[in-house]
Length: 381
Image 1 (spheres, rainbow, N blue to C red):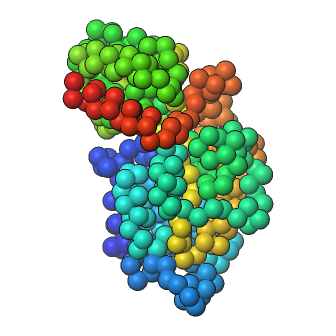
Image 2: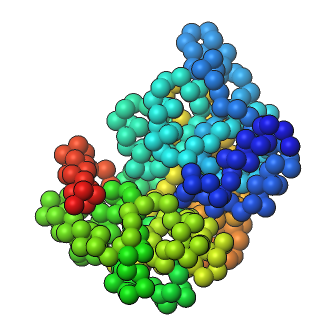
Image 3: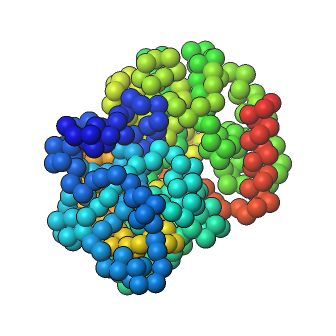
């Protein structure tokens, strides 16, 4: 194995504490990728590869290259090699573990990436900072393959700046042997969960739990509703063990019998320990989606569009969904996705349940500040 392969292997190490939420790709899929020599996968572009102006910028657009920055463990084994074979474009591929890490790279203006994968709530921050370029829909004929839910979403109506990569939900991961069947937030009151359960260290997700338990919309703008959610979470803090987003190892090791969790993390824990199950709470939750976006100064923006359109092919979208075990936004891919995934209501919730799993909404500065203040009161109270 080369130094480059070792570096990729470290990035794909599902035991690493850096791996969270997207870390669901099975080890067999990784080794299949490694066995191919990780075709087209290399070091991240250096500052020397950053966007330039004038004639050099024009030449860069003609280069058969694509610089892709994606979450760790969040791609099918043959996505990159298949695209390279179909297009003749060489992909330089690198990984990040948090939205903040990726945002810092893009905001620096010197990263040289053509394609990045922010989460829906970070898309708004990118747009406010002017970090993205609008997509050219004439270059994306396969955009018609998207499920309607992802073409009319509040985070980017009409897919002006983004195309969905994969999506999931926020719910409860739990130990069947310790808690029995869990259906909602009342599980935090169970004796076996006392002092050992967790909630996510993410403001909107944790406050959504408080809002839903208080009977309110998780996207409310009402200050009094947020006050009630803070009261719920402060009371809950007396019962839980920790506020943390690192849930996989504590769940699989049996230390934590109940955790507010992203569905992908719960499924990884379930793969490692069959005693772990995942529930979408009866009270509801949130959906999240990760998005393909083109940075403002992408040196190979046309190639980024070619990759997006390639991923939107039914067979490519299905292979991606089968590998990462997340929900696919590609309606045309559904007939090719593994039946055990399509038939799993935790991956593809039925319509009546999906209605109780909205995406997080954009609020604007005043309400966002209200949420930030509420979360500070939870964390420090």
